[in-house]
Length: 180
Ligand code: ATP
Ligand code: MG
Image (cartoon, rainbow, N blue to C red; front, side, top):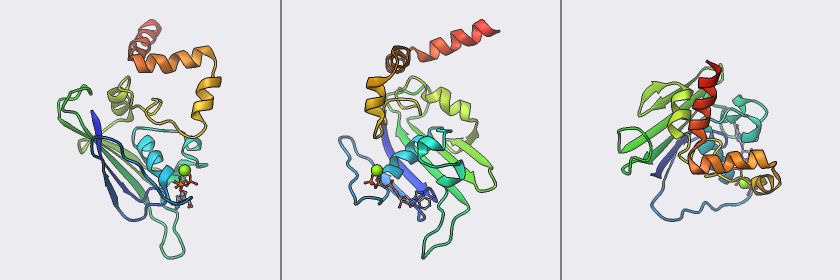
């Protein structure tokens, strides 16, 4: 599984629709301070279901919508699509390409789509759980997170290893079964 493409419109500093094609190997995003490099990774975490505005460096979820600039009016919605290559079928989804879209409006309405079909946030969370790419996964390590992992409590650190080992979904299922 690998990241093929990211499409962003109206998310944070990206007022225009932008598309980034990733090729196998290393991709580096470079640019001056404040040019939107971290907003690219925020977009990836957001489309994978991040619910915490704070961890997206905002106060409320509406803050992810382009707020306007000197030359442009604010936009009414933000939309991010992440396209993944799934030819190795690492994701339990019978398509060689998986696209995940999240859209949010200023009114608060929001939607998620998997391969252009409307779905629930839970469908996305379930699909990516234990894939190493979920919103809680370590595939995105933000500034400060390295220290956090090193200084975390043993239980919390264990959860990181469990996600890495792919056993988290069984633990969650077990917990659910016990509560029934
Ligand atoms: P650094 O090198 O300092 O880490 P960076 O390239 O990672 O910088 P970002 O943090 O991604 O920069 O981008 C910050 C910019 O995004 C700021 O200029 C901020 O005004 C802009 N920004 C964030 N949210 C919005 C929004 N909702 N609407 C418009 N602009 C936004
Ligand atoms: Mg940054």
